[in-house]
Every structure is written in C-alpha cells, then in structure tokens.
Image (cartoon, rainbow, N blue to C red; front, side, top):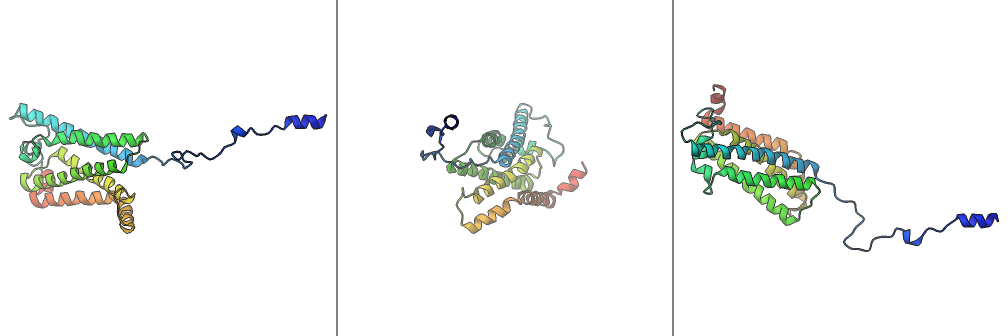
Amino acid sequence: MEAEQSTARVRPFPSYAVRTACNNPHVTDAKPASRPWAYAIFLIVAGVIGWAAAFILTVEKFNLLIHPQTALTCDISPLVQCTANLASWQGSLFGFPNPILGLTGWMAVVVVGAALLAGARFDRWFRIVFNLGVAGAMLLVIFLISQSIFVLGTLCIYCMVTWVVTIPTFLVVTLGNLRDGTIALPPRLRRIADSLYSWIPVISLACYIVIVVMAQLRIDAITRILHL
C-alpha cells in the first residue's frame, strides 16, 4: 500500500515542458546588448541646447527683417552681437539663414538620442550617414568661427553656444564609430580611438581654449568684454 502511494506521488516531468535549445536561426540565447545610456542622454542634451540656440537666432533673424533699425536682444556691444553675423552673407551660406540648418540638424540629433534611449538599434549605414551629418556641422562651425573672428570681428552669443555643443558632439559620434568598428580601421587605430574617447572633455576644452586665444589675438576679445 505504501509503495503504491509513493509511486503515485512521484510524477514524471512532462516531456513538453523540457527546455530545449531554440532551432530558430533568428533567435539566440545571447543577452541583448545594453543600451548606450550615456551616449543617448548626451545626444539629447546637446541637441536640445543646440536647437534652442538655433531657435533664438531664427527669431532674432525675423526681428531683424521686420525691424531693420532696431537693435536685437543679443546685441550687447560692437564686439558681442549677432546682427552683423545674421546680416552677413556668411549668415546665409545656402540662400537661407544658417539657423534653419540648426533647427533641423539639432532636432535630428535629439531624435537619434531619444530612439537609442528607447532601445532602438541602427544599421551601420545609418550610423555612418549620421556621422557624416555631424562632420558636416563641424566643418560649417569651423568656417563660421574663422569668419566671425577674422572677418566680421564679432562674437555672436548664440553662435558660440552652437560652437560649444558641436565640438563635443562631433568627437563623441566620430570616436564612438571609430572605436566600435562602424568606421573600419586597423586594430591599432581602433585602440587609439578608444583611448581618445575617454579624453573627449579635455579635447573639447583644448578646442575652446584655441578659439579664445584666436579671438584674443585677433580682436582683443577678453579685454573688450571685461570693459563692457
């Protein structure tokens, strides 16, 4: 009797519940890649700051067109102003005000950052195209910095905000793509890009210092700002 009860209590494990390896080639047992939180948040913050600067410059451009004789709110002195920049041909390189490029370009940066934060994964071609866009923004900023300091002799506040966020954005995106293999490089150069990635704040600061030195040597910017 006891043997029968013991046998009744021991039930074989159902065969249909046995865990087996998945034979679907599109499904793997590997853990999903972690989300690039820091990278995504940086893109969102930088994009919002850049977009805000572009928006203010766009509004100022409208005010300049409507009231040509009225000083803009960003016109603090002959040195620190945005009227000269917005009214120059350099301020409309492609036949329309440059800030419009910022409105669209920085919003794209915000969208990419938000998508990554939500768990999106982009194909290699998209990451390369995004990098090309950021590189184009960097080249444009370098040109505008040179024109502002050496030709116009002015420092536009909101333009400088754009410079400040464009430089680290370019470094973060480009070095990130170099070190993870999105942009193909020999292993040695990838290791260099990986090492430089942790130095982005220092590299960015060095770029800012170079801009300040150029502005000081060309237009005595520090002295003139201190005497406002």
